[in-house]
Image (spheres, rainbow, N blue to C red):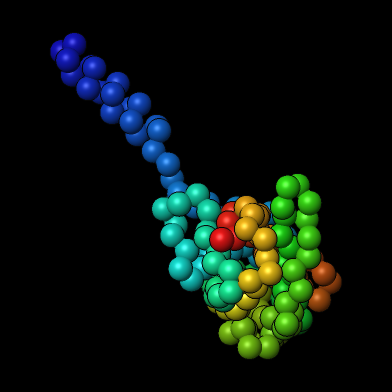
Length: 151
């Protein structure tokens, strides 16, 4: 009996120390919610996505929408050492070449796709990527934070 209790306590200690891997967190979604985030070549067993310089990464975000959206803009920021810096995309219009056809309807689910160039000029740092899809009123449909490391 005492031995079984020791095994049980050992199992609890081991299971509580397991690292859960990459966590995508909501950072203020207002009119929708993301249901799935996939980043190319991202090992989700790690605590952060490794973004290799001089490559491109693709991102896919599945989301549900609670209100009609006639226009959608992609806004991306990188937070390094507590400072948030905007990342300028070549095509911030999420209604063009992203798998979305605007207007988007309330109560539907959608799949958004984008390409993120990781320039060679970027410093090798840890960065918290904040990816937002904003509606015609500049309200966040979804906002997802992605822990990443540029190498």
